[in-house]
Structures are given as structure tokens and as C-alpha cells.
View (tube, helix red, strand yellow):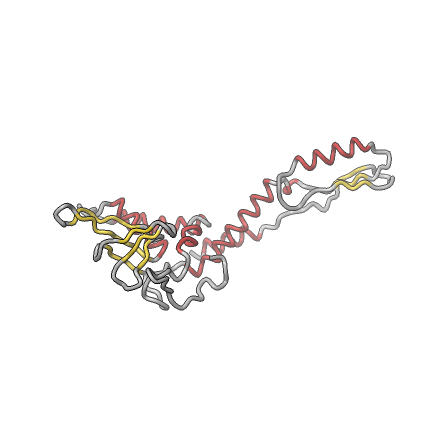
Length: 241
């Protein structure tokens, strides 16, 4: 999913049994929580729809909310009609859009969870709600695809700043020791103390030992600071929604 060619598709290709979606639905599911402004917008829409829905004996409010969230996330919503012993409708159950595929002969749908696990739905038992796409008519696509790059950039900047903080770089400096009279044991102890104060990651600290100068040891004032463009990007990504 994390490629500039995310929208450069033409059609849904068939593997002989079913059509593959034009974009990775697993990637859309992974990106669902990439940003608070992304998932919260989808949750808000689903909650509004659920609050205005009138429950039916075939479709509960909870089932409708699941169906609505699937439709908003993947651009496809599937309802399976479960039948009773005499063939009548028992209830309508949402099927996870992440795993539902249309059969290659358009005769129905199949549930694919992994390459070995598959379940073929009974004919005429699945209703598909589609958000139309301009390039193909097999699957729908969500309307937020163009904003995914912003959500991924927001996620990457947040993870980088978390790692920068956790590995101790937010409090880092370079310690210069220029007194030739320093004991090697003291130098080793200070080096170990600096190393243990940081977790795994970038921007390691170093201890420099040089020949004698007037100042024996001092921290350099050119402290590494993380810039704050990430916050600007977060606000832009939020306002874009």
C-alpha cells in the first residue's frame, strides 16, 4: 500500500476462481488506525448512521453498525441472508468485506481468509453495497484513498518522534574530555553510563578523549534537537478531513 502507484490500477484481475480487489484490503485494514484523524472520522460516520437506524427483526443495530463501518472503510458492505429450517429469512448477518470476493463467473461470492480457508456463500444469499469506482465495477472503493499518504506520513512522523524520545536522544549531548590526566577507568565508566542511558535507535552519543587542554571536560552546546514539522503535518492531515 505504501507506494505512489496506489491509484494506478486499471482492472480487477481474476485468479480463475474470484476477482482480486484493485487495492489491498489488508492494507486498508492496517491503515485504519494509522492516524487518529483517520479512524475517528470513520467511527463518527458509522456511529451517526447507527444512531439513526431503526432496528429490524432481521437486522439489529449492532449488525448494522458493523456493516456501515465495513462500507466506510473498504467501500463495500456485504449482508448475508441466513435462512431457517424451512427456507425463510432468519436474520441478515454482515460478512467482513476484507475477506469477501466476487466469483470470477459473477455467480456469487466467496469468503477467503488465507489461501487455504475459503467458504462459498449460497447463491443469491449475499447483498453487496458498493461505493462506485470510475475504473472498474466489481468492487467499490472508499472515498478517502487520496488522503492515505497524509495519514501514513502522520504515522511515520509520530513513530519517529516516539523512537527519538525512547532511545534517549531528546536529552543527548556530546561530551568532550580534553584532560590528559583523566583515568581510563573513569572514561570507561562515563562511556558505559551514557550508553546505558539510551535505548536502541539512531543518534548515538560519543566520548572524545584528547590531549590536555585548559578545560578538562565539558558538554558541547550543539545539542541535537528534533524539529517540529511533524505537528504541522498532523494539523494539515486533520484539517484535510
